[in-house]
Image (cartoon, rainbow, N blue to C red; front, side, top):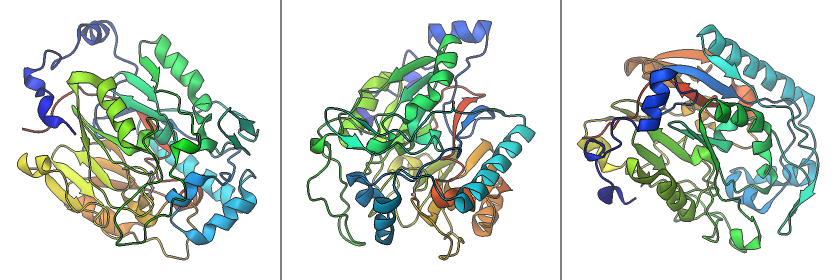
Length: 385
Ligand code: ABU
């Protein structure tokens, strides 16, 4: 959106680095520094499954949970702990993920334990409980040296940021910028009354009104000075505008056109993997932004997921096969069992590192969802001519 009015980075006074950043770089490395998905990864926050609860039913879930047959499950069990037979294998997956990251020399940080079981209310809504601090990618948007707490649309996730406050305070004390986007009201005016999710083939629509700015951090993906965002049932135009104005002239914020009947987040849909390589979900992205082709990027079509239909998936779709995590330009952590994307990655010059993750995916998300990169070794650049 508005890409034409934002100066090209090379003509922009901030195109190298601001005085403040230079000063930090001169003395010590910035503790928070992430400009894209592929610079060498140094520090990351990985969520936890400890104490994870089934999300309590709420209006937004009709618009984001693909499988209608699960709605009654959420209505009945929302707010209760996930059954142990789902939690334990999910925890094993997460432990393996952390083990791989640490083995690669990445510093892994974890959220602070927080009691998500309490019901709470605001003047605008009441909810039975929160859910979990399993997916920091949705909560914290790291862009450059700043951490933005996202204005999330799920009422049950209203306090999820509390699990990351200690980390944010620490990063702030060490020099990071830390800001919370406007706290949403999540009142009845936030959601379209009587919303019915579209059927496959019908024009895309989302449950959100434009009453207030909303986005989850995972509705946004970084590619240096160019930031890509897709509207979803957690992200409205007002949220995209807020982000654009907040980031200011040093960035170009682009809205990506996607199609999804239950849209939630961009990271199983549209993923710039490394300079010149854009991975897209063929069901959801029909018209990748022209700027990629113009600048000679390869558009890589994600192969169909291999996860069997019998595998339980409570919130996300099987397209988590593309929800991978880049360790650097040439290596990606990928869910084991997804051999077709692994082969494709090899053909594209990226070494896949398999991690058992399908059990975590059952009740939460993929390796990208389960983490948020805090520091990658690299600088702010433009990747488009
Ligand atoms: N970040 C979660 C992606 C959800 C999905 O596309 O299934």
